[in-house]
Every structure is written in structure tokens, then in C-alpha cells.
Length: 514
Ligand code: XMP
Image (cartoon, rainbow, N blue to C red):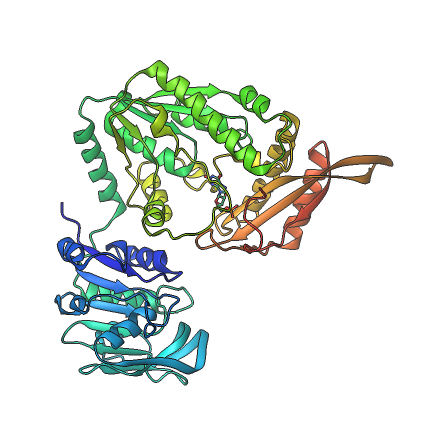
């Protein structure tokens, strides 16, 4: 089936992935490409519509990201957002200058509701603005369709050619009617039928996998996280016992997590696959003994994981396919990634392809955003507990224990974290907060419990809200919830006499502690 699609051309805006996600919420498939993508490639994809994103530059400066003017002559509707709007105006003969007043934040916008882009939008509506430059003169054959108190051109269009420029950001939720505006563009102006649905995606993927694999043998590294679990179940439904899943329990998982994974994927679970659980806890603790430096810990855990997996893979012998749980943001980031510094060396299962004897990689989720992976998981009938599992780093609790990792410290952080998660869920916050967990600081301090002096560890609670995990704000948890968590941890977890709540945002902090 040919999937209708809209293309987002990225000019480096911080919301590029958000634009694509919002379009997909209108049931229209959407992909992101760098502004460096050749126009011939865009033409070949035959998109139903094109969206130009915002970006940090001024479009009139030398070397600012630009695009071939031919893009506006393809007969394909184009929507420019912020920088994308300014660039469209500049390339088509308008003028862009530094604005006398910088507009930032929620802004009242007066719009012309006769524009097809603003169909059924209120004539005065709140939009999210963030710009230094402004369109001081529109391009010939365009009409102004929106303005604000400070910005004479908040939107302009050439309806006949299907070209639309808007200064604000409809993709951001602060733009109250943003989704309606994007819907008007993709479903109304571009004429997309809205056929991008998770049930058909899942069904088609299962068919495709079956065809591709034939009678071949498939190997999957199962971490118990959302991505690898959804990928594994999709494969299991497609090819049953031709699939072997290897699950390495490195002893750095959350409390009971290993058993929960086994319940779903093991011999008593609903699937026919071959499930291999490797209990390698002791091996990891031995390698980590005495190691305190965060990067060294990460490297040891990553390398040991590959060694363990390699040994299991050797037992299985040559396979035809190796499954990877790559998702769309990984694809976008590796394709568009700049020169950003390595802050932490993230380890997932990146090193696996080198240690396994296989012919081809299967990545059944490479076109999906995280929320779509979850939807696919629910379609596949995976338990909600697993589908809505928190993001969990590959090195696991190893990077939530500051300093040396020991079995005793793992026990403390597992128990504290389980209490924290339980209370957050009880308070109804578990699907509201982006990521939350307990960590074990390396600090011990004096306390008093039942007239006795104690000298025990301090646990730190972390909870952040984040859109893309690149930046994050600490979450506001009701004080009463924090107090309950604190008193339960102190009473129930041996070895802890103090609990902190971490208020640090990212930057300057990171989400994890190491
Ligand atoms: P940081 O700590 O870098 O975390 O602000 C951002 C997000 O990435 C996760 N994270 C990791 N995930 N391997 C992973 O698979 C890692 O080594 C790793 N380190 C951090 C972290 O949980 C958060 O969601």
C-alpha cells in the first residue's frame, strides 16, 4: 500500500519532531528531512504537502539555511512556520528584517477566518510566538491573513498556489488552536485522506515481516523496555518460534523487572517464541567492583552486555535476521545530527551487530515516534504495565548509584524506587510526569531513629517533565506525596535515613545522575 505523506523540511528548529508528531496525530504519515536534502529527492517522494520548520538563524544573513525556490513551483502545498515563513517570503520577493520588538510567548493573534488554513478557528486566538525577525513586506501575490499588536504579518498566503506562511508555532500546545490549523493544512488544503492508523500499521508490518523472513531464523535482544518489547511481540506474532529472544538480566534492573519480563515472554506467557533469560548479575557486579568513575561504569556495563549476548548468540549459531528496536527519533537524530559534544556515551544495543553472525537487520519500529510505539504495543495486546513503562537507560541502576555499585546498593535503590513509583501511581501522576526515579547518592549522614544514632545513605528522588529529553524541568509533585514517599522509604528501606528531592533542570543537570 502506498502511504500518503507530508514532508517536514527541517531548518534546525527545536520543535522539528513536534511538527511531524502533530501531523501524524491528524492521521497523516509525516517524515522529517534536513534542508540539505536535494529537491530531486523530495520530488521523487511525491509528498501531498511540505512544511518548512522554524530555525535559529536570520534568513537574510549570508550562509543562512535556505532552499531552492523551485520548491514553491511543484504544485504541492507548502506551509512555512516561523523561519520557514520568513524564508518563503524572502525567496518569493518579500522582505524580512530585524523586528523593532521581539515577540516571545503566548500572543493574541487576529486572523482572517476566510483563509482555508484558519477554517473554524476563532477570529482572535492565542498563539505561541518566538521571533527576533519579522516579515516587513509580503511577497507579490500574497495576502496578509493574520496580525498581532506588534507584528503586521503573523500569516500570509497565496491561496491559488497553495503557499502559506505563519509566523507563530502551531505545533506547540500553547497555540490553543494549533492542531486545528495543522489539520486544516494537511487534511483540507493538501487533501490527505488520513489513512495513517496504528491498527493498519501493525497489521501491515506483521505481513511484511512474514514475507521478508520466510522460513528464516531471527534473533532479538530483549531489554524489557517499551521499544524492544513491542518489536519482539510484533515479530512473535509474525513468525512465532522462528524467533529467539535473549534477555540479559544484568542485575541492574528495577525491582522485579526481570520476572515481569519473563512472565510476558517466557514459556508461561502467551507467545510461541524461544525465550532465553541469562542471569548474569554476579558477572556484572564482579566487573563493577571498585569502579566509581561514571563513564568507566557505563563502558564496563555496555561491553559486558555485549560479551554475554555474544556467548548466547554463539550457542544459537548463525541467524538470518537481527531485530533492533530503533525508533524514528533515533533515525532523525542520526541523520541530522550536528557536531554536538558527547556528554554521556549512551549504550543501548548499538554494539550487537558486530558480535552476531547474521545477514540482515530488521527494524520494525523505525518509522514510529515513542507515543506511536506505545499505541502499537496496545494494538498488539501487550500489558499496559509494560507499554507505559518509563524510559530506562541501558546501563540501568548502574548510573543511578553514585560511586561503586554493589549488590547491597542495588537492593536499596530498587526498594526505594519501587516505593516512589507506587506512590506516584497512587497519586495519579504516573502518566503525567515525563520520567521519575530514585537514585542512591554516595552520601552517608548521621540521623536518629528510635533513640539510636544512624549513619546511613541518602536517597535522591528525581522527577522531570521533558518534551525531547534534551531539556527538562523538575516536576512539581504535591508536597504530601513527597512526604509519604520519604517516610515510607525511611521506614521500609534498610540503610536509608535521608531523602532529597532534586530540583535541578537540564541543563545544567542531566536527567540521570551519572
Ligand atoms: P540524560 O541523563 O542524558 O538522559 O539527561 C536523557 C535520557 O536518556 C536516558 N539515558 C540513557 N538511555 N542509555 C540509554 O539507553 C544510556 O546510557 C542512557 N543515559 C541516559 C535517560 O534515562 C533519559 O531518558
